[in-house]
Length: 566
Image 1: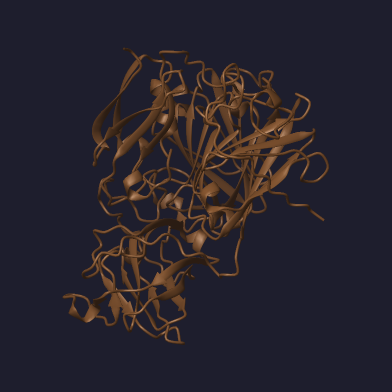
Image 2: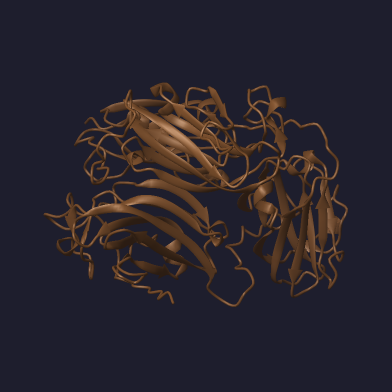
């Protein structure tokens, strides 16, 4: 039986005290970066890493911490929509490992042997621990190092079927798509098994008084949710509401059409379906109102169904990305965002993925075969890749394929290069590797299956990896040199923080001054149809955060200056 422990240690310690700040776990650095919502972590995520030592934690002023850890975290997670969930962290390793976490509220949490054998495990249960940036160190008790995995999984923390997220401002007036709701992104494959979102059914404006919208009951001006959908192809989208009062639903589809329902789901609850590809590929706004003007808790349920009639791919909305084939692989979309350096990929990284796709790649004009979705499975922001080559391979239980859009804009495809009907791709040029890589794991026959994507760097010209250092160390930028901590394109549109860190880090780290040009054709468009700002946070090797900003629409060539000179 697993023993789950939750250990809380006081308030934020920040950059730790005199004599230990540079040698102890340091919040100025970031690890491999990933962004998740509570519902995404309901499916267990397993990430490969190296449990390592470095600095003695008992000398770092973190209450209760012991063993050894590096200055740089193994992982930096940006978490959102965690209300109503607890998050379990579980390490498996071949040595006596430890787990140190700096939560979103700045509190420190440590565990040694709460998992199986000599491995750690702990839960974080409070929303203030989980909403925002969470840094994780996988250390060792005796200053050794060994291969390890970190598993993340959410569990409902209360009896409610789904948590109710923070509601958007309840602006009076008729439904207005110019207002933002809670932003959530899904692909068709993510919706096949259904997604449920907490919502407050409510409204103050009689819908019958709003011109151009055929409906009744009461709604608010701001939508409850902005759904960013991709890879939907010809799959219809089904939406319904379960609420404790007489609820209604209003939807503005991706093509701008309005849809309303009151009681089609039975029990005084609404149900709608969107069946045209032009309605479901892009942004879909959803209002959950009530018939009588009261309010109550409810759940919005979403599901992608079977394809109804094969149709040609539809163009994507044109801003700011030029029209693309609606179902074809599209680097304007982001997958799960991860940041790595070449030295971090010395340790083979294995990522879970669902191999699958609904669009025949041979019709997309990019070379390749089989089937893939419009949205990549993973978006990698890579830096420090000089003198490395990167090998990507897939292990799957079906005939899988792989498509890569490299940092220089070149496409790469493979079907069976890894043997056993699995693909393998090797990228060797620095221009292909320093920046953003998008990866699609598809299938040859259009079916789907569970798979693992493996990433590993080797020294250029070598068949074997260089001897692995005990732990990738923080960038050697030094005082007076730029060290990028986080870069975000579209924070005002609800995208995950740090989604474009790798590209600017690759260009600016180690310089005294850097003028960086924001170009959506290079870094992609993470929120089609929304004018995006650009924000970067960096330090100059002194642990003091600085910021640079470009107003929307930043992606058309705005320049941000990072400066570490007086």
